[in-house]
Length: 415
Image 1 (cartoon, rainbow, N blue to C red):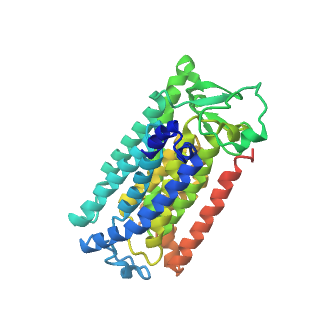
Image 2 (tube, one colour; image 1 turned 90 degrees about the vertical axis):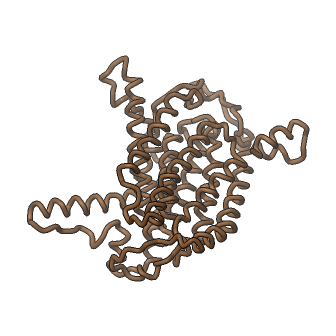
Image 3 (cartoon, one colour; image 1 turned 30 degrees about the vertical axis):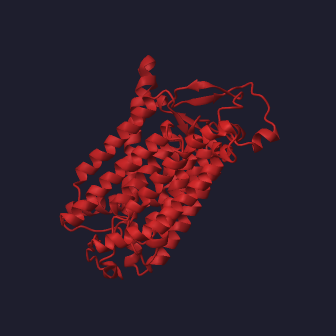
């Protein structure tokens, strides 16, 4: 909203109005606003949740210090959602199709998570929202995102021209907030290409998978793309949900992932840096940096209260939304194939559950008694059972997250 207000005032040479045309300035303002909302107003939300006795029901799993968390307010994901949505509405170009998709994702999965928490707390049903309804909701969002990226005319990429003009130092320094200086790229095209890491020509086209269909392969490629979107949204949102089992773990990990995706969105949405790094240029995605700034501010601000010992839990209201935001953001900037690296913590947590359940069922059929790979799943509980203090587990997982983030950034040049 402020973006349009100051764009209008800039026509009359209003002092400082031109600053709002710069992504970097609006991103900085978004981070500050998000931090203020999550840290200052977050305290009031926590007090309200405590007053209304909206508290986590703790199942006794025999973990050290587990029962000390009994009575901690939950549904704190409301703080995260508000800290993302309000700054984005204030400082982003809300008519940008990518920003619209991110806001829809935030509200959509936030609502599904809210229903799950509501059923657990107010309906006294420990199972919460039935798993099939969560999956249906995630599939629905995947369809919306995938079909929008397919059908919307603003969703395009630009191919590199062989004959490109030289880029001056002055152009590199100047921030690209509009569609200027694009001589080195071709016109807008619809494409099913994405980024594949560690390869010299680091672009993979989903059309390669359906080349055998001949002239119908291009349309079929979009069908494959939509299916991939659904799988990624479901997997990453569930991965974040599973990771939310220790104080600050999902929040801190998500902040690291968000910062990395913000960098990737900035360079991929800036024609100068995209040309310099020889990566895919996606027009209009630079605006996503503003959204991701709100995401980073929200998670860091929430971590103030969610770090050990937690004063509030995010619940499914926050965890499902965090995972979904990360998944959709990566898909939009065509970095979804980097998710196994960047979201390695989520992947490990997911795989630990799949391996544990699968191995238990297999051994039960074969030997008559189920056996386990881990002492407990998800993986962070395995280390708890081994006697590691909760803060140490969280810190080490976050260090691994930082290492994975660095590897992800390095893939821009390693190929």
